[in-house]
Image 1 (cartoon, rainbow, N blue to C red):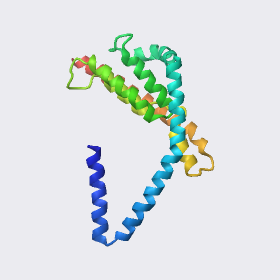
Image 2 (cartoon, rainbow, N blue to C red):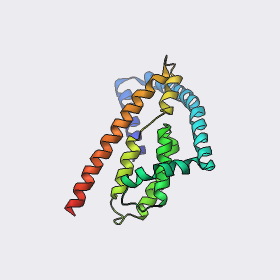
Image 3 (cartoon, rainbow, N blue to C red):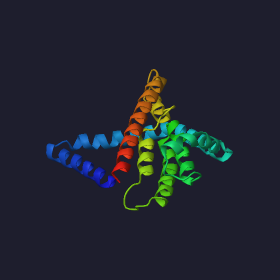
Length: 195
């Protein structure tokens, strides 16, 4: 679906350039932006590779399992419908760890695995279960302690103080997580009363 949206937006841009007679601007923009995108990727790649590697080392050394055990009391409160010891909780904790490091791309595989495991225990396979919704909220609004990708972007674009984003990022993600999880809790309680 996203491919269709991008294709539509690109098509509209090309048609607009043809209609307004800005073909030269279109050509110049394509060449300039392609070069800029490549530079950005080359600047971001080492940082993402570094943190993904650290996450992989943490996983293989058992540090993620210890982090998962540390989070289990909280996860059991957030996901009361998920049986204790379910694989989904381990994947959720890995996803949380990656998101805390600001590594959305590294968090994605664990998030997908968590959703697969949550789907296995979902009584109604055609709709999202409460644990799936809670995980989606937690994943989307998750607390980020080190916004790695944003820091890399700020460094790539020569920010005078790239690290000044850390505290606002922690505050913003903490507020969004608290608000999202509170709303999820209220809606879940009301929905269970209606059943």
